Length: 348
Image 1 (spheres, rainbow, N blue to C red):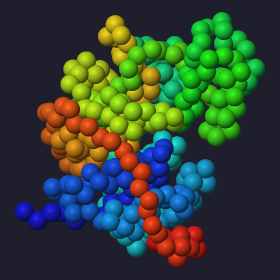
Image 2 (image 1 turned 60 degrees about the vertical axis):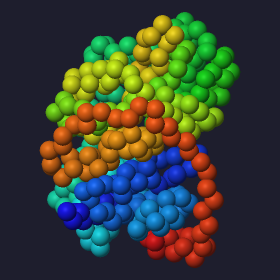
Image 3 (image 1 turned 60 degrees about the horizontal axis):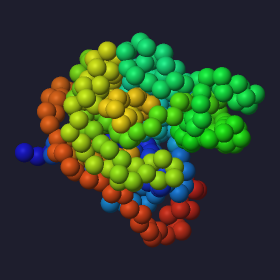
Image 4 (image 1 turned 120 degrees about the vertical axis):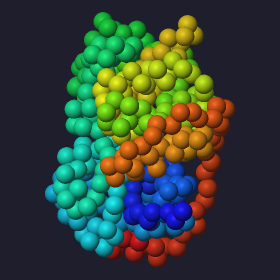
């Protein structure tokens, strides 16, 4: 059976020590048994490694940052689409999702399909409102508080005992053992990601994660639990192993059924020594370790494309337990002419 040919645009090509999900998503698509894909990379920075990985990405275009506004982004995508005829677009950064969600109807008119959460789904799972989320959906979450200025730091002793987690609204999380450390992390995070900064109760235990895909009707198309085996100083998993854990899968099904989640999701949990699970974060897209799910038998990027095309997708029933992923660094040798071309013309 011949494969269907599709052109798929993907963001998140920053395959660094703080990797975006773009390259793992693309690897999953290239492993597809149903699709033959032409991959269009959408890059924000000139040095995103995926731009220069020509066996992974067929052509790359620079796009404006979400802060430039929806109209500027749409104008750029309209130009790219006039050349490439994009079938599906997969955004992979939290910070850009709002713009793409609001643009979904206009993109569809261009012939570009997406499969993203609704604005309500996206907004209600923010770290800053996680306690309300936990109460609404009966999920155990750590105590947390959103703070908007440095003076709030001095009253944290009334609600928290140290250490605490200090988190950005999109990315970054640090442990703080005293007020001075909170202040330092607050300044660093707020200057990078804006306000609020979230203070979260520190829960001691093992960090476990689930990558999952929802069909928007309350069903889980696929879900794979993982335990981080090695964590970088940025808190990113550099190695992880698939787990058999029915409680994590039940938690995922419970959330997807209640919220009718649409698209990819990563659930970050802490499993305590007494077997309790605390949901510490929900990332509203496929994570950078999604290729582990592909390797374990669930090609979630392929399933996401099918959902974007409006096709029915049969849920995955199982996955391989004990599959391990280990990241590695690799020196990619490029020509300065490629860098100059991207910088000058905005495409490569």
